[in-house]
Amino acid sequence: MDVVLSQLVAGISVGSILLLAAIGLALTFGQMGVINMAHGEFIMIGAYVAFVMQGLFGSGISLIVAIPAAFLIGGIFGVLLEQILIRHMYHRPLDTLLATFGVGLILQQVARDIFGAPAVEVANPAWLSGSVQILGTNVPWTRIFILALVILVVAGLSALMAYTSLGRRIRATVLNRKLAETSGISTRWTDRTTFFIGSGLAGVAGVTVTLIGATSPTIGTSYIVDAFLVVVAGGIGKIKGAVIAAFSLGILQAFIEYSTTASIAKFIVLIVVVAFLQIRPQGLFSVRTRSLA
Image (cartoon, rainbow, N blue to C red):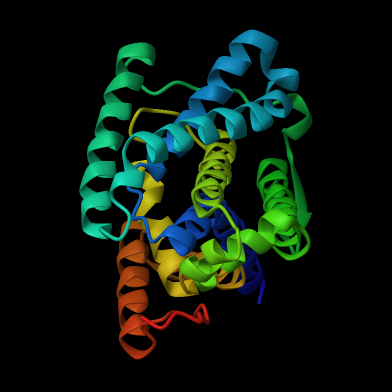
């Protein structure tokens, strides 16, 4: 019983990291159908923002400063990508995949030129040191901080989508882009704002991953595949589906890892997701549109 509880806690911890990496992607992929392979590099940018903030402010308050800074810088990079490249490729998802993959490689090389190829460390603040015992398992405070941040991000994003005019414009654009334009909604402005938010959330995810490991130019590639798995399994564009998929996959991976290795666990989770999509290709939840197409 202790093993089950400890793996359950570990799985929730893994799921919270997967969700942070995927939540921004769920937003942009859901609305615009853009396969943004550079999303992982936006996570990398957020991680290096945390490293820079540590140099400027020290490890005490740098984490608090880095979160809004990474959101802003990640969002700006996202808007630039959307304005310069992606807006010319709407309705051509395979082209966006190839183009953003190339952008991701460029961003990795820029990071190598600026920070060097070796991984750099971001020290955890003293107030996040140590652990707490939950269900007989020692859980680091860093993991609890990430889980709390995930809950805050999901609650904020859900409130944005449900109660604000921006959220209503985003939902209208997802449901029927042409009808939304006819109703006076600027879908171009909505796309740009959505990309800013989604890319900014990737930057925030980058800050959190520095709490559990070193930062390198290729750190984003460790998360991009898992992020797409979460989005596709949860249902494209559905925040609720992304939440359920992230924690389900995290818990499944934790239990498999207990008797195997991390690599085998990732492979088995991938097989499970592929098998699930054969049964339910639209994922856990699907967007109900009024499109005539």
